[in-house]
Length: 313
Image (cartoon, rainbow, N blue to C red):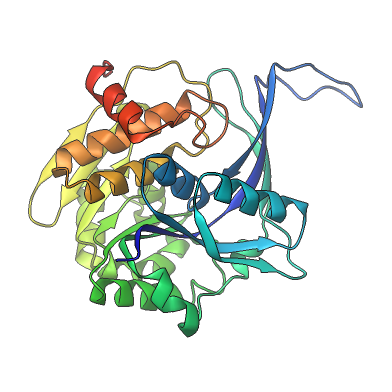
């Protein structure tokens, strides 16, 4: 395969401030301790985190022909990510967020939807995009053009090419399920947050939710549970839960997306399922120790050491 990891979908420009306490009245001003910029989004965070941990990574998505888009592409390249399939779309705006991070890690945000809805993987680009050991889509539900059947076609072709496929989503209601359901038959590992799984199914029991997605076609479900860790449920009957790590949380922005990258690293390294999920959980935890997506992720060796030495909750 040409790449270890192909990360397709939602790329965004984030401006983050910490710690946020309140909106000042009128035209007032409150002082904060830190401001930073980050490439975020379900595909963007995963791409950079994976590259930091040694995967040869391809970024696949869309940004605008604007200053934010220029910076996103520059930042991806800074970490060694291949941006040859990133589309800078004339007339579109880069998906961007202002993230106000509280001291407890929660993050009320203002978001502008942008070029994620406009990009498209055509037949000419398809061969390169699926030529990876792990092909990941992050952001179904935001990818307006790709969600109309093209994501399903892409993952079907990726599977036929021999890739392992992973999927993360942006979902808030059962109305989002049809766009997800058309892709699930081509997915090896479906990795939503537990809140997204609940929103899609209307269920609350993790076993029931996993069975619903497996019945639709997913081979395995992994639910990220925030401070409660992660839940793994495979169609072969393997079920387990791993705890979260004990950390001082700074910013939870991108934690689920960093988890996806960590799991891909585990797959590429040949880890057994439980070790791969624990490594993914460690990647997510490290992400939460810094301000902005993937800020706390340094390298494979650093993450592995953290996994082996840090206490769990």
